[in-house]
Image (cartoon, rainbow, N blue to C red; front, side, top):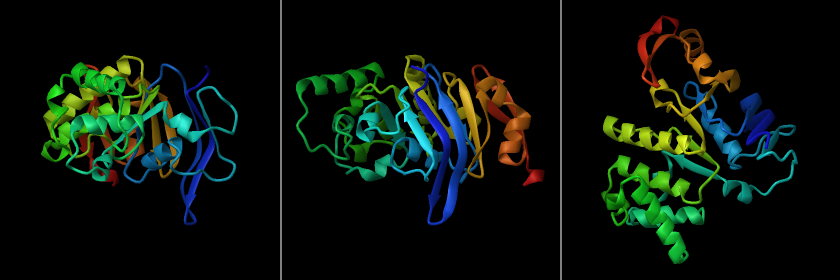
Length: 263
């Protein structure tokens, strides 16, 4: 298979306004990507197109999993792509237990409306066990911290063993310990063979298993390439319109200094 996702001349127009355009991007097997940019750069819009929730403009082309055909079943595609967003928790009733939320991943539903079979239940329990959070299986969502809820939603996205895991700013609102715990979970997933697409505007949220970076700026691709080449001061600074110094801390990148004179 030559590619997992391939975008050609991607453009999105909504209410007469162009949100993203001129995006030519290919994600190959073995790659994991971080999509970086300021708020409003088009990161979430791009993910919504990939997931089939937004229809691209006429002339745009999107291909999945080595198939160059323009005709595909988006429901079949979604079984191969897991998705987690900070907005997901707002869609759930807060009296649901953790294991029920995870089981909804089999049906791509918000709420559990079918009776899962024993294999599904054992599969879900296995994910809780793998990440050492068995205590969250029977806990109600309304009684969980935000970090605990995000861990449960992460398992929901993984329940059908997707080839790609899409994470739309999954660390928003988390305290530092919860953020680091979920970063470790995401990195383990990436290292285990699942390709990642992660949006963020913070370099320390780019897990070590990410291999490539795509910058969006004003709805257009700004730079893209291997992570080590892209996470340089001059590129990061130009993408965010101010002088930013990065430093490498082990396998992670962090902001060292910010000069706002260019804002």
